[in-house]
Amino acid sequence: MTSPTATGAPGATGRTRPAGPPRTGAARRAPSRLLSRTAVNGALLLSVLYALFPLVWLVTAATKDTGGLLSGEAFSFRGFDLGHNLSQLASYNDGVYFRWYLNSLLYAGGGAAVCALVSVAAGYAFDKYAFRGKEKLFGVVLLGVLVPTTALALPMYLLASKVGLVNTYWSVLIPVLVNPFGVYLSRVFSASYIPDEALEAARIDGAGELRTFWSIGLRMVMPGFVTVFLFQFTAIWNNFFLPLVMLSDQKLFPLSLGLYAWNSNTHAEPGYYPLVVTGSLLAVVPLIVAFVSLQRHWKAGLAAGSVK
Image 1: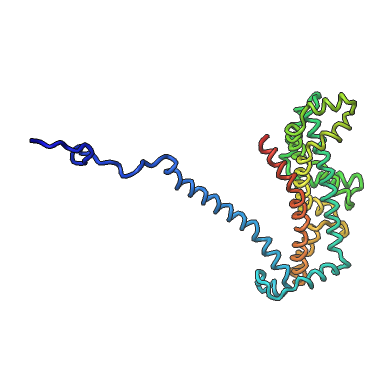
Image 2: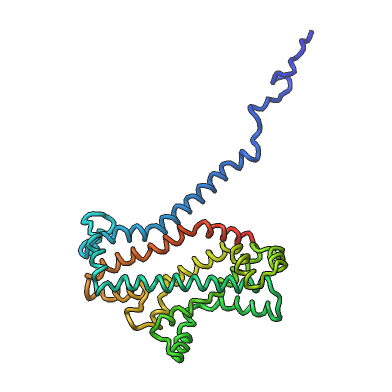
C-alpha cells in the first residue's frame, strides 16, 4: 500500500521553494546610484578645493612679511604681520593703492550699471518691438559675442587717440558700456519675465513707451538686470589689457594694472611682495560683496535663463 506524498515536500516534486523574494530592478540599481552619487560628490569636492585653494593661499600669505613669503611658509600663520602689511599698503606712495581701488570701483561699478541698463533696454526692444531688419541686426549683435575684446583694443585705442580720450577715465569707461552678450541675455529675460498683456494695459492707461519700460518692463526684468550687472562688473574689475593700452598715468590705473606694475618690480625689489599679495587679497572683497548681496536676484536670473 502506498502512502500519500506531501505536496509541499521537496522530494515529491523535485523543486525547492525560493529562499526569498526576487531582487527588483530598483534594488539592482541602488549600487549604481550610490556609485554615481559618490563620483559626482567627489568631483564637486575636488572642484571646490581647486577653487578655494588660491583664496586660502592668499589669506595666509597676506599675513607674511617678505622673508616669510620667500621662505615658502605661506600656508602657516607663524609671524602674523597682516596689520603691518595693511599699514604699508595704505602709506606707500601717498596711498596710491586706494586711489587705484576707487578707480576700479568707478570703472566696474559705473560701467556695469550703465552697461546693464543699456543691455536691458536693447534686449527689451529686440523682444517687444517689430521693425525692419530686426533679426539681421540681432544677428550682428550675436556676431559681436564671438569677437574677443583683446582684438578690439587696438582699434579702440586708435579711435580714442583721434578724439583725444587716451589717458583719461573715458578711454576705459566708454568701451565697457556695451556688451553684446548682455543684449542677448536681456532679450531672453524679457521674453520670460515681461508679458505682453502688462505692456498693453500700461499703454491703454496712457503710459508712453519710455514710461512703460521704466515703470513696468525694467522692474519685471530686474533679475536679468542684476545678472548682466554681475557679469559685467566681474569682467571690468578683472580687465587688464584695455587699461594697459589706454592709460599711462598711474593715478588713473585700476587695481589690476597697478598690482601688475608692482609685481613687475618684485625681482629687483622683493619688498613689493607683501604689497602685491595684501593688495590682491583686498581686491577680492568687492567681488565677494557683490555676489553675496545680489545672490537672490542672481540665482533667480540664472534659473529663468536655464528654463528659457
